[in-house]
Amino acid sequence: MQYNFKNANLAVRENRLGSITGFTGDLETLVYRSECGSLKNRERCFSQSSSCLSGCALNALAAIRNVAVVYHAPAGCTAMASNDNVKFGQIAARINKTTNSVFVCTDLNEKDTVFGAMNDLRKIVEHTYNTYKPDAIFISTSCVSGVIGEDVDGLADEINEELPIPVIPVHCEGFKSRIWASGFDISDHAVLQGIVKPPKEKRRIINIKNFYESARPQITKIFNEVFDAEPQFLYCNSTIEELSHLSEALATVCICGTLGTYLGNALEETYGVPYVRTINHSGVTGFETWLRGIGDAIGRREQVEAYIKKQREIFIPQIEEAIKPLRGLRAVIGMGPGFTYEIARVLQEFGMTIEYALAWHYDYKYDNGEVPPALEHLLKNSPKDMKVAVADQQNYEVLNILNRYKPDVYFSRHPGTTVWAIKQGYAAVFVADEYTVFGYEGTLSFAKLIRDTVTNRSFEKNLAARIKLPYTKWWYEQSNEKFINPESKK
Image (tube, rainbow, N blue to C red; front, side):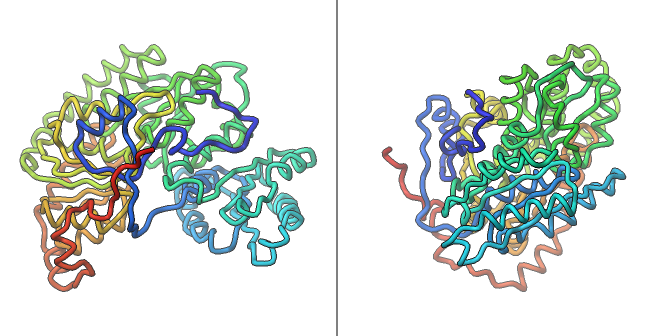
């Protein structure tokens, strides 16, 4: 696709990738209809909750060191800012860095929605610069400022002429998309538009798109030893200077295709930086495939094979022993699409059965026009009739499925559904960290975690015996797709 960095607006995933939030069926149907382009969304006539794309976009930008995010929005829209400040501060402290970033809200009110607030926005941006001296300022729209048509692009152009730092507009109107992962693309677009510069020379750097860089020490060691390169983690704790050189990297990799599709493909098409498109690092198969993909991209395959051989001798016997108690266990998974199909693959490698795999949304193709690699790999190595759904974080659908299939364990990357599964009495594993199953050591630890979780069930049983859930017997007797409408004819 063509990337236009002169325009601050970006097409959302529904329009750009054909992404959907409603589907029930089996794995073969999902992949087949993705490949032939016939997959269509199924709307819900009832919806409990979801997330806002603004959170995904602005969280990523606010994690960059020494920047300011000016959110042109009502105060309530910045509820996530205090949590991010604590979270990013903890991450920065872990690697002996300080973020110094600020999150500012213009506090739009009823008067502003009638008469506009561009003068106030200008004053706040200028005050933010004079007070904090950030290395860049991101001016973001919201649902309110988007509806009333505030010209943040024009203001950013004006202030760029006045200040010695980049001032970048970010279009984060939450109503634009039901898929919060569109926010990942919006933050990437802002960085590519206002910060990344054309390459001058190649650097021994590999861009790695992730969330919170918890595996920084392990990845840095591997990249140094195997690839003779340094990792550039994005965007948490990166600097504006570091981001300006993304086009000079040896390659770009990502912890999941959902998170990295826009940035990786844009850097490859615009600046020739190879984007490594493989299944992710989770599990033995994933980790080895991931390493080989990077090695092939930068000409270090021989070093990769030597590393793999050495590590397998240490860890494979331990992993094989650890997964023995897991064989035959039945699982239900509820995560974002970048992890649902990856964790399903790992569990199958452990000898477990996937009863149902739910993804919070689904991209039927990525920005290179191809079906997600994780899904294609899963289809080749799984029963074709494995049940899958796109559930949009709908807890009522998840609990219906858990009650119907009664799995041995439930896996989620959303804390809310994890808690509700435990309240139902099911063993549950919250895969919060994107590097929970990173490499051989992470795979071994994950297998032991599952073993311990399914072995000690006293907490779940005691909690379930003392809690009355809001879901009735009537709902548990319905199909989980009760409130999902038939496919649109459009």
